[in-house]
Image 1 (cartoon, rainbow, N blue to C red):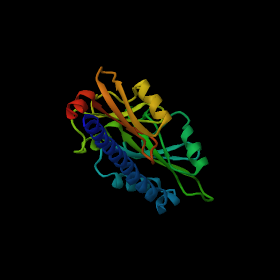
Image 2: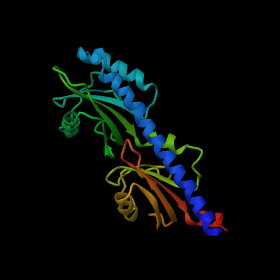
Image 3: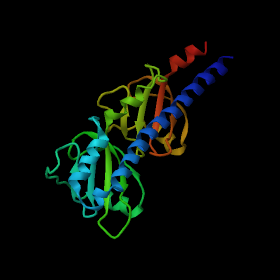
Image 4: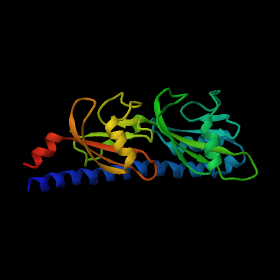
Length: 239
C-alpha cells in the first residue's frame, strides 16, 4: 500500500508537470499569434516601420516583461518596443536572422542576455512571409520573470522546486531563486532529460535537498520543465 501511495503522489506531480508544460507552450503560442499579425501587416509591407512599432506596442499592452523587436534581412535592428521608436540600435551580427529566414519557420531560443535590456531573456522569432520584397524577423522577447505567471499556477505546492530549462540545460526561470536564470541544470537531471522527454529522477539539488525530480518536455518550445518535490513530502504522504 505504501508503494502504491508513493506512486500515486508522483503520478500527481507528473500530471502537474505536463499541465505546466502546456501553460508554457500556451504563453508562447499566444505571442506567436501576435507576431503573425505584425509579420503579415500592411504597414510592414509598406516599410512603414513607425506604424509597425505602434502596432507592436499596442499588441504588447502594458506588459513590462515582454517586448517586440524587428530586424531586416540585412541584420538592421529597425526597432525594439522596450525603448522609444527612432532610438539608434547597434549590436553584433545577428546570426539567428539567417537561421530563421533560411528555415522559414518559427524559432524558440534558449537563454541569452538581451543586448538592449541587459537582462536574462528568451525569444520567439518569426520570419515574415516569403516574397519579392525585403524580409524580416519579428521577435517577441521574454524577461525570465515573465514566467512567474506560470509558477503562480495553484496546482503547484509552495514546497515544490519548479524550473524551466532550455535545450542546452540552462535555466530560463525558477520559482525559487531570484538570480537562477543562466545557471546550469543539475548534471544528473540534464543527462536524464537529454535521453528521455519525460521521467522521474531521485537526486539531490544544488541546494542540498533530496527530491523526486519529475521532468517533461513541452512540444512547442522543446524546453524542459522540472518539478522537484522533496522526498520527505512524498514519503510522508505514503505513510
